[in-house]
Amino acid sequence: MNNRLCRPFLVFIPFFIILGLFQLAPLVWVVINSFINNDGHWSLDNYQQVVSSPFYRQAFTHSFLVSIFSAVAGLLIATIGCASLRHMQGKIRNIMIAFTNMTSNFAGVPLAFAFIIVLGFNGAITLMLRKWGWINSFDLYGTQGLSVVYTYFQIPLAMLLLYPAFDALKVDWEEAASLLGASHRYYWQHIALPVLSPALLGTFIILLANGLGTYATAYTLTSGNYNLVTVRIANLVAGDLFLQPNLAAAISVILMSLLIFITCVNQWLVKRSYHVY
Image 1 (cartoon, rainbow, N blue to C red):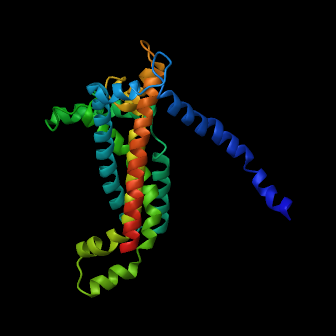
Image 2 (cartoon, one colour):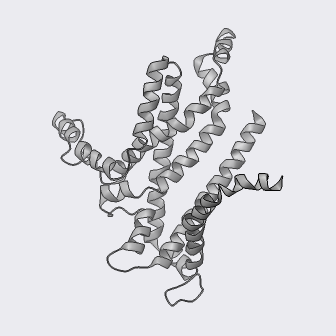
Image 3 (cartoon, one colour):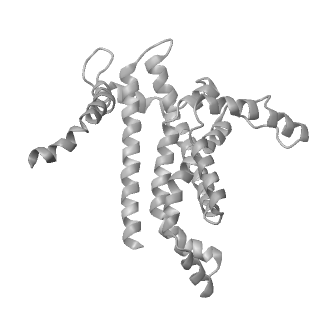
């Protein structure tokens, strides 16, 4: 009997091996080396350098600003899109879901190259809008451009995460609210959004983490000239001048700690929302 119970767990042995080699082992290495300075001694020099440096503080500020903006904008657009999908016919809805699934995989270098062609300094849409006098100061390679690009790849991911949550909304609820005299806005404010709040909070955290961890798109778009946390980590590990993997490990641990803290706050809010509603 015990052998029969143990046999299914043998299937997971390759998974645990891969998890240990490619997830746990690098994580342990990063944490340990973040406490080792350039002289090979245990210390907090790396963390002190990150906290005291305006350059690295600016990298965290830029990363959080762009990620928060894209997460909020992507979540808002995705919520409206998912609400619209529920009112579409079956075939059209399936086509739109398949299209969303396809666009969610369009990221990295190809996405940055596409935006350069369309919205770069000499991009097709940029030249057209400039000719019509509608745009004069849009910078694809700065904060504005990164916010737009990040929002673009956040939208399909948010829609894929949110769409199943909309099954919790019953059509009868909106009809009953309408019969009782509630407006469409009142229904969404007091019924729909409270029910969707756990899914919205969870999706926001995933989008925020997705934005903070993005590297290829930002590096290709800005050639590494825009100060982001992921760009700084990459330059310290694989740069052309000075390699400081221990400092990069400290930055990674700080970023990971911030994400863990945000996730814990999110879980606390989700539990409260479930308890209240």
